[in-house]
Amino acid sequence: MTKHTSQTSNNGSIPENAAGGILHIDLDALASNWRSLRDHAGGAETASVVKANAYGIGIEKAVPALSAAGCRTFFVAHLSEAIRARVVAPDATIYVLNGLFSGTCPTYAEFDLRPVLGSSEEIEEWAGFCRAQSEKLKAAIHVDTGMNRLGLTVPQGLTLKDRAELKDFETALLMSHFVSAEESDNPLNAQQIEAFEAIRASLPGIPASLPNSSGIFLRDKPGYDLVRPGYALYGGNPTPSTDNPMRPVVGLEARIVQLRWIEAEHTVGYNGRWLALDKRRIATLSVGYADGYPRSSSARGKSGEELLAGMAIVAGQSCPFAGNVSMDLITIDVTDVPETQVKRSDTVTLIGGQLTIDEVGHRAGTIGYEILTNLGARYARIYRGGEG
Ligand SMILES: *Cc1c(COP(=O)(O)O)cnc(C)c1O
Image 1: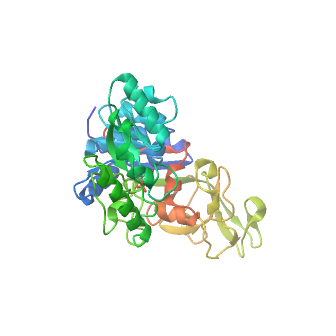
Image 2 (image 1 turned 90 degrees about the vertical axis):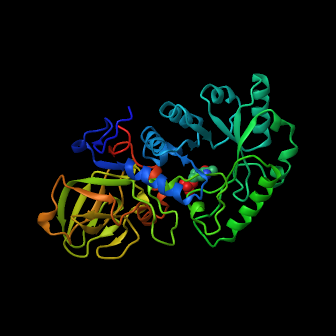
Image 3 (image 1 turned 90 degrees about the horizontal axis):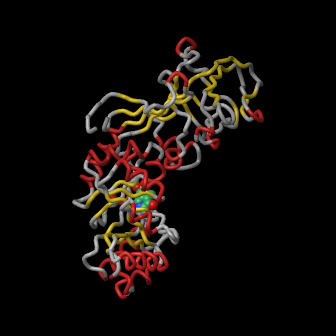
């Protein structure tokens, strides 16, 4: 079961030559990113955030690869994801970030999972369940230091120590979450650290956790006991104002279905939003927004114009999108690629090389996180490395 292999496997998904898009997922790069984050974490335990199907790459593949690298603690968003993680990580510590839904305590106990409690009601329900079981089960408590989204308020956090329910269960982790750690100069970072520090000081002996991926790279980083990277594990840049210290994990190729020359004054795609000013060669790719490739990458304008829109790499050359991204197809302008270097059934790169997930997100007016978590179900998925 723990056979190490550098071979590729496509996980029983669609055969590569039948797939419109081919997703390459490098589990060795994932493991290497985890190790490099651990080396940055200043002695804190390095957990892995594997919510949203491990940011799109597959929870059943990511969790064993991260476990083999040495990761012992995982965070997911949903109870259903926690159960999937439990199947492939029987001994790991697994936290569910999205809080405790009413009536779900027995499921947590059954699968040995830990809720992240974020309100008085959740604390009461978990404490009541533990009393009824006569067992001090483990949970995390989330304090909201600025997001105004999930977690106890700061005043509630400061009075936590006086709550009788804290004796009914084991608070295994006290955590908060950064609002904008990727902006290293944002004064909110220091404000959040200060608020969290005060709460932590009032609850001595409870392990604490604050940094996400970008938080690990803050100059005055609060290491505490555990860090919770997600995006950086999957190759996203945790330091957007400087070079990406992480290795890419995800690559995407799309297959060319057809090539055609179009005449000047012709448009491409739905609603005719892209106009050829001269004779142009268009390649049609078998990937579209139904594969999670954002329609907001559509190129609306004229040939030769610099547009903030999608891009593909064809035979080593950047080729801009032409027209609207359709449900199942994308059209690109390959006029500048020598005609013999691009033909039917070739694949082009949509993610890879200079087309990082951050760049693809930027070109779609979104963030790389959204690109990853929307990676489509129709792609052939080819996993490299990891545990066989
Ligand atoms: C998603 C999430 C993380 C991971 O954040 P990244 O920016 O992906 O590293 C950490 N903590 C919490 C509470 C989260 O929701």
